[in-house]
Amino acid sequence: MNLELRFFATFRKAVGQKVVEREYDDDATVGDVLAAIESEWPELVGEILDDDGDIQPQLTILKNGREVVHIDGTETELDDGDRLSVFPPVAGG
Image (cartoon, rainbow, N blue to C red; front, side, top):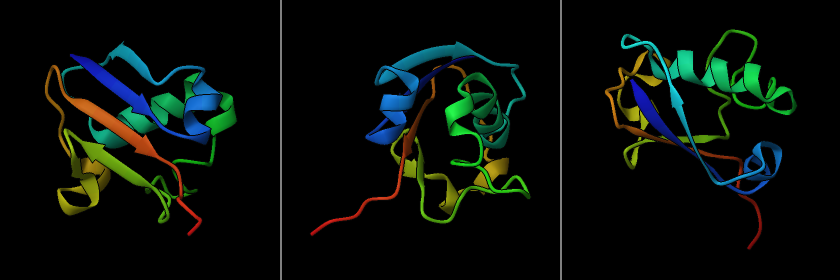
């Protein structure tokens, strides 16, 4: 399946662009894709997934605009053409 990956703030800097399209296996989950992202961009290792393979608690990961923690977390299923957005922690005021 083809996915659109969107990166914001410091993640965009690490990846070098805001939007990337990648192909994944048809049965890939959000956790599979996030692990693949960390493999492709070594600067992101440990920044997205913790040692147990769970999403770092301060991150926001959206599937088509909906937070995956409110779906099935890393087990959230994906479909061809889905958009996965990765937001780092936000601070400021």
